[in-house]
Image 1 (cartoon, rainbow, N blue to C red):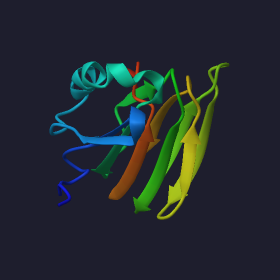
Image 2 (image 1 turned 45 degrees about the vertical axis):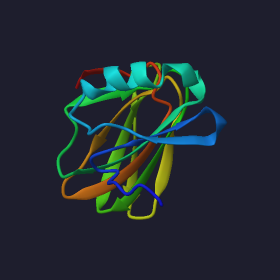
Image 3 (image 1 turned 90 degrees about the vertical axis):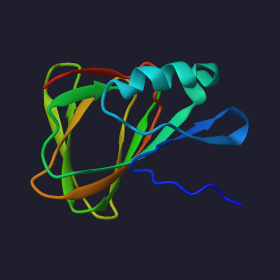
Length: 132
């Protein structure tokens, strides 16, 4: 029987040998350090699948040095903001059903003016965060 859980509270790690492993409840940015330890054996090939609901712009930037991140807007609308190597910013609006990719090593954040649900498929190893 399948193990039922919510991606909103318990992300899933996709690992080597096509494994899918439910993760402990997401508690905030500090959660990522423990995730890195749990999934370290999968190295750069591991992927974190998570679903987040938010209605305000993010207060931080993040960057995934070892792989791309797929962002899928499931409902509402968001604007992805990427910081390029020269310090300039690009903005990519997404509506329900749209997706975009954050390339490895690119700092990014998200703006929202209302409720949105977003699916993230992330190369989580080495993820970094900084204040916006």
